[in-house]
Image (cartoon, rainbow, N blue to C red; front, side):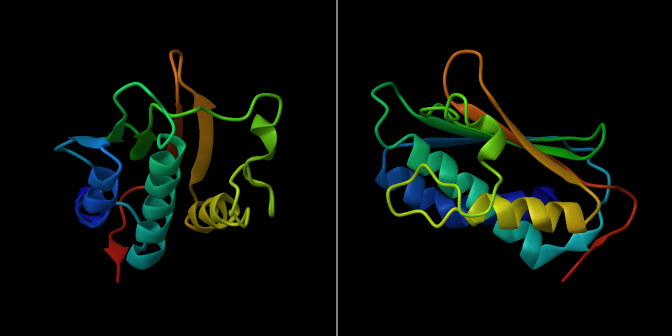
Length: 147
């Protein structure tokens, strides 16, 4: 999973830099193997990172995107310092066609959650205590990711 994270961070780094967003990774060295489709998991991470970048475009404070991996249950977290989740609509962000973006389709998070769940995992989000939001995904362990 760390390899997938590094690949997507590499792909998204120029987009983040274009908006003066710093990207930081905190990847656990002893991460267990996960099972799943590499391309689909790349798609999920790319969607979460792009959403975070877009959430920070209008923030005045120094924007930072942090991606963490944790070995406890193979958890990956994508945190931003953006506008946070919409108040009183937090439960709807994973609904099909729900969007807060001007040109969004409302399908990215729905598809991402569907992919993670099809791999036996979970995808959820919460507002950060100060500002922004964090999306967490967990995956079952012990079986290698396939191409």
